Image (cartoon, rainbow, N blue to C red; front, side, top):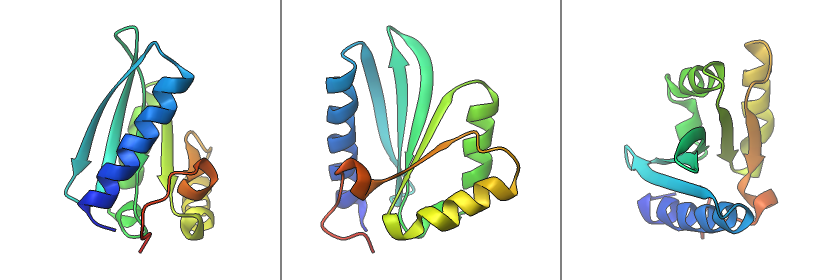
Amino acid sequence: MGPKDIQRMIRSRVAMLTNANPDLSIEDDVEEGTWGLLTLRERGHLVGFEFLETEESWKRPDAVLQYFEASNDGYYVGVLVPKRCVSRVTDLMYSMGELPVVVLTYEGLGVTPLSLS
């Protein structure tokens, strides 16, 4: 999955979230060309983050630390991964204790790039 796929998924997810909550404003970024970050604000107040991960990017050494830091600060944290990765990601989260993040699949949300490889 390349930067164009990530951008396409970001646009789709942003549209989904803002349609569901018109008070939400979202900053988006493609990080390291391999994963996306959505910063969610409601009426100007930071409320959470969504990490759009690839089959490989969720394995980066600081990924789980980023999820837990944001969650421990009291923010909503969603991690979107390909369906074939969800059990490995969820297992990793549970191995660290409570599951303070929401793990979602692109396929389950209908946010699917041309290629999830």
